[in-house]
Length: 281
Image (cartoon, rainbow, N blue to C red; front, side):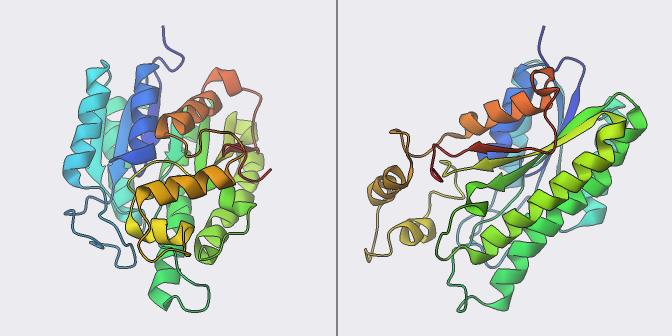
């Protein structure tokens, strides 16, 4: 018996990293999965010009589905940019046609593009807001009504960041977008409480994923070095984190998401749940 038997979860940004970890962890506990991601070709900046790393591909997304199915669960996957309301709606409707219900939404898709506050281009700012803030609203708009209509209650988790509370140079646009998710979460938590639907944010610290493991992020963490390496980055993360292990793994966040969407967290709604290794202490 799993904690999520007979449940269906919709997860964005599921091609790899945290999204894939969430899909696999929830499948291990019995959930069927509707998984989306932008479905880029793999070229750096493909589909999102301000991003300095390769995005998740359709092949990555298919691998996530395979991993879900390896745990005996079913998976529907579709390429859908969270800026595209119609594409998100089609993906959710495809999942509803296959599974007939929706119980959980994990609005996880997001980007990182470190840049100086006053030197970043309009494109860098706008793509950040469009994906990390507005894309979450679009995700919820096309999916949560299905939970309401099901009449069984449910749970929503929105991926925010520990950057909402810290002051980090070159992350003004990222921090602003992630901070904007907090009032969105709290208002939705109040609006949806009568339907038995819980809404929370998970605030992650530095997590080892492709979004983080790239030269642009290394430079953001180590501006004192001309060509910082992964080892230099790790040293900087350990200096920020209060717990001794430094950067978190995607599974650390997936375990927190599982708690928030399962009956283990049945009394938790409207909450900011930090998994940041004590970075903001």
